[in-house]
Length: 438
Image (cartoon, rainbow, N blue to C red):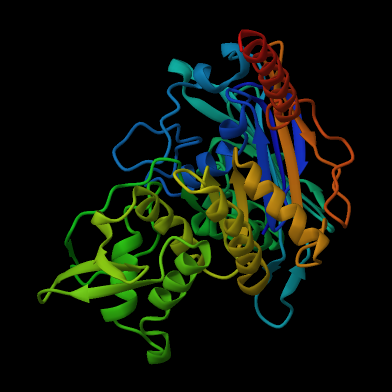
């Protein structure tokens, strides 16, 4: 699980920012306040470690199938200043390192990477480090373009301290030459990089624009690894759960049952079923208030929330899911119930959710769940993003064990009280005028 995220000079986040990530983290705020870009470093690093090019320092995207397309380095550095230090920081754990008779478990590891610009704005790693309780494993770029290594025991001897062959791979990994040069510490450095790579590979992202289902869905027999940033693989994952191969037959159809129960919990369906219409063709059928129909023929909100509910049960235990506006197209009652679903998945399946949202109803339900002791402030972080003079600022909300917010931001969810006052004032004015006319 990721426990801290830091970013420096990334888009609207000028300067250095570090904030805590909990099992459930909500990021709220006004439009264009930097909420979306706040969580993009995780996706950017995931996109980089999954790149087929080992030599790539930072994959800014633009190729078919990639989650992000961020343009050039000058497009992501605050103010377009390529001289500014762009950097990311992650704290994650627990992590197991060491092989053989003495494996060790580290409660927490801190990873940090800084970037500079090479020719044609191609990013290059300036410094990469993993810091543990036992010390730091690092590689840093020198003025001559070589990379110098250091380990908990200190810098390496001059004859093997700095070489071009030590250049990091995909922002997180030590090269084979670097691992060999580090000697006994090389295996630990390699394990740390592998642990972060696995965490990033298990990271899932569900964006605000979910795909629209078709009336019939073909299944090729392939398993589904992730649901896709628009949830395009949610229905294939449900079909695979029902008819695919399972090492444990007791799991057959379990995902369908869980998602069906989740939709019922939100109040958008009584039941969901996968119906076979041919050898490889299936339909998603929704039953609601006694009527059974194809998913395509029910309210748009059902198809849009289906990937959200599916991700809560499809994500592997202990993994992280980033969601952007999961409440879109949902009735306020369903938005509130979404809070229950996320909290239960967090507690029962240890899935970490990082949620960008505008939903007051979701936020209020989380407050209620704190008051009911179904989640604690230690398990949930809430932030409010705002823009000051063109720069993004993140304000942690101070929420107590009863769900009360001590530092309520001004006009957090608009000016509800002011609107009510104005409405009552205008109503009384009109009533008075009507009486005069009468």
